Structures are given as structure tokens and as C-alpha cells.
Image (cartoon, rainbow, N blue to C red; front, top):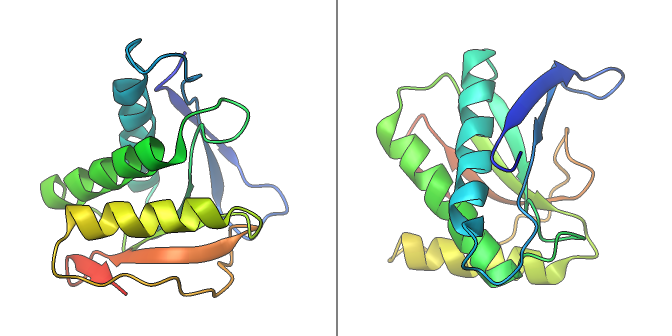
Length: 150
């Protein structure tokens, strides 16, 4: 069901766990997709925290074959991450928003959404490979200073 998450061991990946998030299939935007995507992101962060993870790589859930428009998805993902950071005392110290290198429009979407959510900050793509994600590390949020690292 969209918005749900579950955790499995990471196997041979360089991580402790894989948090599987069920993202919504985008239809018209009026079928509850935004709240389902928000829930998938927020629940993923809660699962990471519950499992004592210190970092998490967060992809642009539902923007691939599920057809969620990238500008809308990245905005919702940033909002969920920001609310989690503002509300929780979490063990998570790093949230890396990631995409596959071929998805430049996702990195631009994350950057634009972050600029809108956090005016006055100038995010930039780090271009550094994330140790867990197969794509590029785009933006990082450090909980230690409770601000976005650009």
C-alpha cells in the first residue's frame, strides 16, 4: 500500500539495512498521491531512526515508472525531510537526497525545492558518490547543526 515501508538486511550492499518505501502511482494528483508520497518519505526516516541508522540515502521515490512529476515529487520529499528534522530528536546525522546520474532533472528538482523550502540558502549538487546510493549525492542535511549543508 502506498506510504508503507519495511526494512530488510542490506545483504552485500555497503549499508546495514534497505528501507523499502511504497510510493504512489501518479494519476491526476487529486487521488491522495501527495500525502502517500509524504508518508513514504517520513516513514522511511522513522524506520531509519528506529533502526539506529546514522545516515540514509533518499531517492526521488515514485518519479520513475510510477510517473510522479519530478517538480511535485521533489517538493514533497523536501517538505517531509524538513518536517522530520524539525520535529524529531533523531539519531540520523545525514540525509542524502540522491538520484541516478542520468536523472539531472531530479537533481535540479531537489535543488529548486530546497531553495524554496529554505530561502536564503544556496544549495548545490555535490557530485560526490554516496557510499550507499548508486547515483550521485545531491544535497545533504546534517542533523548535528540542524541545517542544510550545501
